[in-house]
Image 1 (cartoon, one colour):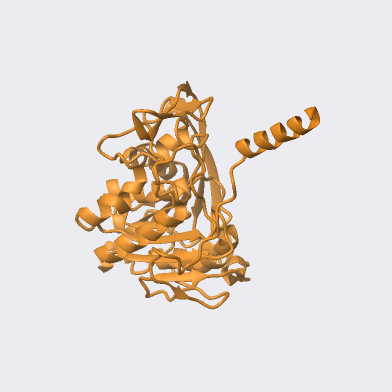
Image 2 (cartoon, helix red, strand yellow):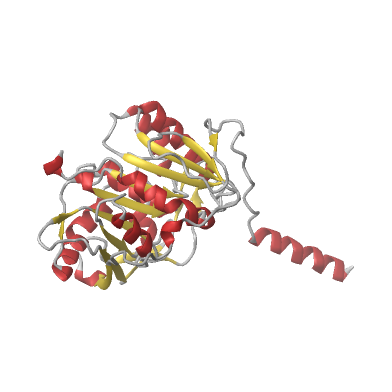
Length: 362
């Protein structure tokens, strides 16, 4: 009997300490937006503003292979100490995840402590850049890796995108509520965009003798998960700075902390109230999600933590409002959809930059 009780206890503890795998969703489930199913290995047309199903088998994009004779951009890296900055200094971290606020199920009670941190920055400068000229650029969250260097070389050489500078910025550490990454990426304000504008871009220009455009149409933000919601937050709250957004597994859910009465639903508010009710902004956005992406992976039960539903809702409100958007539903993929990105990322970068022209040519 003792052994039986111990076995039951072990099973109970194992079940309580691990979360169930997210369910696999189908593109034609109730509530999903209408999709066009593509052939395996096929990417959507560049002129489409629609919803597409890709996979479950993926073909690595040819742009990922080096091509003889294609000019190669250079990659540099530097570091910013939080002590040398004004915004996000000091950083924050938590010891425990936190508890649901009994007075408000939309937020957590989290105890944090201050931290110092170092932020690494990776910079890709295309071979075609001419010193002294204004360069369009793309900010990438959760850097500083630049594994897409060859993709950029090929797309630029084929004149499918302009010769962009790419600035890949590390987060301040941790994840979600109570950590520095969550404070930077998940909160609904323009603070992180201001940090990049005032404390990152000037260092890039000084260190590498590049001139970055002030034209918001020549600026893009890209990110995965909370980095994806951060990219849209930058373009939404600082639309004077960014017009182009590329997201994978975007965290358009309620993960903001601390609680802000003005935006009580966090990034879930984008599709719940902000995009439907506010005037259309100058934003061109690419969305993508996995068919088994995240579903309520924490203790909150506010019905605002389903990544697939959140991205479906984004596609619907973007279409209703007349935005330029493209949305991929990736079969056979979980959070971050790495396998699918091997196929579609060059297409996504090209789509996001479609229509760009320097001010003097417009």
